[in-house]
Amino acid sequence: MMTPEEIQRTMDFILSSQANSVVRMDRLEEESARQKEFIEGLAKVSQDLLKVSANVVERTKRLETRARSVDEMLKILRELMEANLHPPENPIQDNS
Image 1 (cartoon, one colour):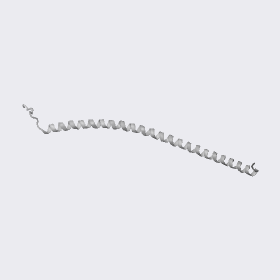
Image 2: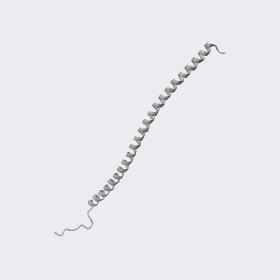
Image 3: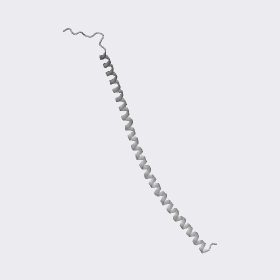
Image 4: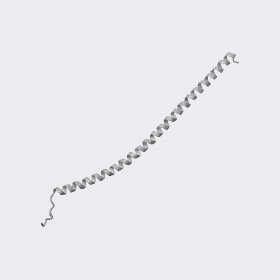
């Protein structure tokens, strides 16, 4: 059988352990809430980055199409310029 002092120490230990447990649980809940906020923020930023990336991909495709068109125009202009540098084989004569 326990003495009244041993019973009191045991009860004090149990109450102290319980109080420490409650404090630890409160801290864990607080940390969990902060982590949830952080994760939600990361998710929002990730979604924003995905939207921006999709826009960049689309703009890149449009620019590539424009670049191909410009290349084709330059090729045609180069051919015309080269054709003008050489006199025609059968020039049209003016009958004036």
